[in-house]
Image 1 (cartoon, rainbow, N blue to C red):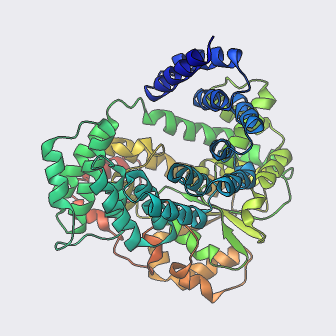
Image 2: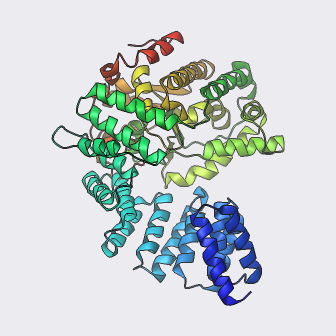
Image 3: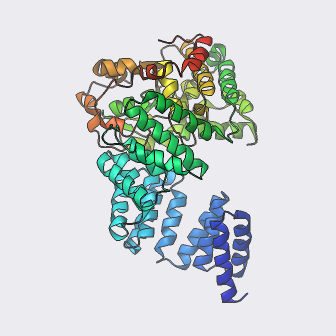
Length: 529
């Protein structure tokens, strides 16, 4: 193969990647590597292809060989850093690789963009924002850079800047549809200052892409609600949810069945038999419950204490449970039901230690850290058996407010139950039943906080939570909205404000439309007020 042929083949491979022909790209990558496995451009291309096929070990080897071949090539460091950053335990390594890339080249906007994304993945949002802004000084009309900068600004609480950057991203590229939600969400829209006419016009003209289409309806519904146009809001939201639900293979009975199986598997006699064999380490505080119930608000309050750090929504617990259970069974190709049933047979001390080892770095030197993944409510029994000194706080909110807030929230990969009133009602009922079970079989282990009580008397509820966690009272927790640390959840804008009660009983604006949901909840014996 001649040099020219290798170059042409590399270009064809890149075209395959751009066209999502991963199989074709992989075949070309293997051919190129057989021809020359020391060429940095070929190695970088091959690494990108292997990463796309989720063969991360092979991808990392190619990136590292590329760096050995050309140690002064900054792009290779950024791409390797991006790959490494996907492993929470390797965040510091990813940061160092990105820093090395910046040492080699700090005036290439594409490289700066890549480095900024690495620092976002490693939760170093201040550094990411700094780099994105630096890149914007060089390339101010890059729509993606404006959007990434807006996202980082929102995480850090610079909401006015986030809005202006998102607005510019949309001006530069009207199809930057994720910017629509960000721009709208950073503040409550008013009758004098909103984007309703623009959104209505966009929808009237037609939106081609499926994902972009439902984004438009969700954002428009949010803005209608902000200005009190409740009937229009719900009608628009219903269209958006229906579009989002199209093509989804999700069946709520799979989730509700899993929750029932968890109750059956972690019965009182099973927990009594297995208790006392866990890891005695302390440190984790699990804040859990249904999404949109005030988990972020409570996280910000508690993490304003000197001895606590907010680690965010961590996936480590579920991954460790699955990994240890797979190892116990001897294979990974087991279904969810088998995973639940076999999870009671693992070494709980080993499981708890593995979790502490994986997450203690998130504490950043403090005595305790908060793991705020709401769906951890599935694992209360495992937490008790594996980490008996952990603290669990469950947030509860009016069932109708909870379900409606989930229904109107456009989640990313999470919350597939939320795009249908039937699904969200059934899912909530199963969650409610599971929490009743946990409180019966784990008496005193879970501290329940009412969102309504938290917003009505924040100081009283905060004192109760800190006491439950074994922490001394700290007045600064009441100034949680002044906390400068980043927040990446759907409530990132709201937690920059003092406590407000405008979300209490919000569902009553839609009482007629939500009657089918109310019927479902009351059919499960859940009281609705």
